Length: 322
Image 1 (cartoon, rainbow, N blue to C red):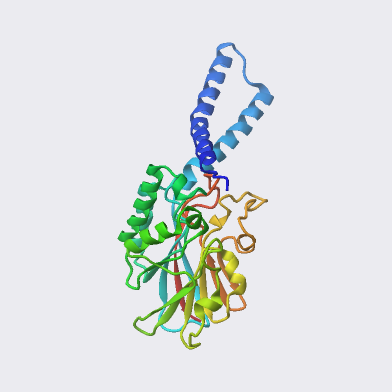
Image 2 (spheres, rainbow, N blue to C red):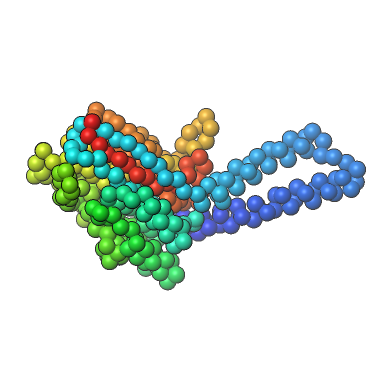
């Protein structure tokens, strides 16, 4: 598979050069015109305005918005949930070794989540950026990935920190990613579930496999097989596509992968959808016949190092009984 990471680095470099080059070129052109006693004229001003607008959009998309972070607070009232409300911290698609995140950015994300004091934290995959396997990465890239996984050791919650792997993690080295997470105190689930006791009643947390898994495919049936109907269930996965087969008993499915399209254009919407499920459920909260889905916009970027009207996010989803 073609690794697009060098292309993204080149695009980001060109964006940084353009951020300085256009104002310098514009000022030089205006100074030279004034010195000769000539203005740009209406055609010239129209061209300057058009280029300047494109320049501003590029600055926002490539250099400013990807460096921001929003905390989304979401309320879900489910008929299949019981017991007291549960505050779920959601972090997805950190892509730590990619543009705009890095160890400093990841630690800022962790600090923001810790300040929210959620009851439980779920990490929804794609801890790694790029498409190349570990053997084709530089020592510096592998070190950044390992340090990024180790940083999750700072993330604490009363009911634990849980994770699933994403497609980029499988392309890189799923064993190394899982090992790094477990060493940091994060438990990884793949078509598995865990019973979590708490005051006011227990609940089950399931984690679905990734579609790129070499061991199995995501399956609600396999994950929830044998569970009593009386105990509520939350499921985490990487792809929104899994929601098409979500059983009625699941109070909430939490996913990432879509990045909310990364770019949302006026009158056009999101021109990029990375899967059929991402097109159907691109971003935010959805309800379908009593089943609930939350799609996180994620933290990092993939392929194109840009975000426009879709800033990086973490979320705190409060799940309560209807």
